[in-house]
Length: 89
Image 1 (cartoon, rainbow, N blue to C red):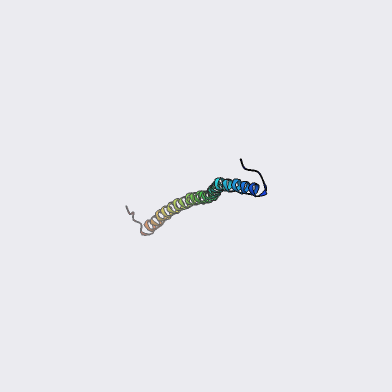
Image 2 (image 1 turned 60 degrees about the vertical axis):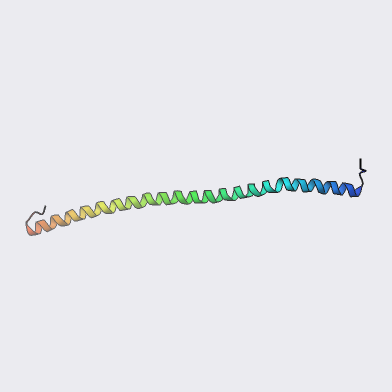
């Protein structure tokens, strides 16, 4: 058995510290990467939801414009028919 003196104590402490670093540094690195990837995913998901809502809004606007165009076309054709006194089929 070895005697516990200052030099041996420091070597034991540094050995334990080295083992602890070898065990915990990879875990901290992985946890840190998971955290930042999760933040990126949440930001992209929020952007996706925003774009999805904007798409619904634009689809509604397009539908309204199509309806307005059909109504205006029918009114235009009706006014042309009245002016000419004929009916276009």
